[in-house]
Length: 308
Image 1: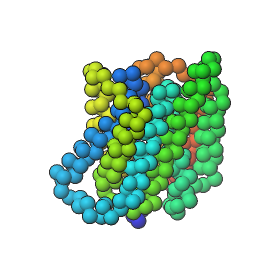
Image 2: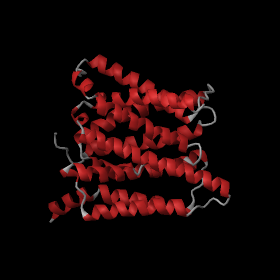
Image 3: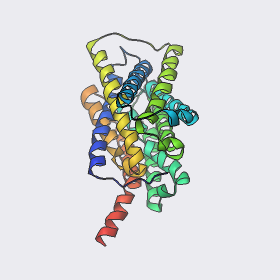
Image 4: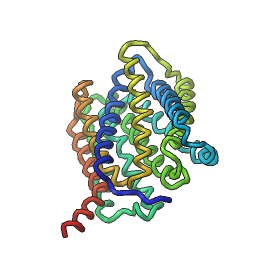
């Protein structure tokens, strides 16, 4: 299995753009919930993204599928984890705010780092990184325990939505570990993504139908949302993400994850008028600090070695 590189300028810039796109996806999903069921929308965007990825692969004709087809077991498992992640995300948006979902979903680097610690020698966590893990989970606990919503029914619904979003983060982290520790890591990024999109689309659309969540009112905002989710989220951003995973250390990529919750909370308050509770804000800051401590440790060590 090929070794991964530390972060460079290209990876940093690309991660900045991806963080903004991923924050916006939750905002857009939340804004269109009344007219477009979230799970249904995610399923449709996933199907369209899969078609776009397949079209690019066919146009390039440079990625034979022989090896990919041999890896159908881990490929389908990756698709199932993808579907689980976004089923949880779609459901969480029905109960809690987009800002909460973004913060809790992007605990994924923490879960991924823990899994990779046990599987790959180059991803072993140092003591300071374990401190970051502990700090992040303390932030999650604080966000759950200190509720700023006074009405018990509303607070209970938001708590359930927050739990679903956190579980989605764990599913995303598990997907990262699966991609890195199985032969999927040797596949081109587009082939790994195609497995997730095709299997994920089937499972998500089936779930939407079974749960009776197929609301679709064809407003201009709904069409704009579907276009953004399909092209920028399910196609371009995920293709870029899996390319980054194959080229760079996953824990180093995670250092930029703090930008996504930051963007999500600010955009949720600005565009959707979502309240920012003091308890959740403090918990979110601890989560962000933990992710930065975890993922930025390698940079700190490298800086110390360079500057004596």
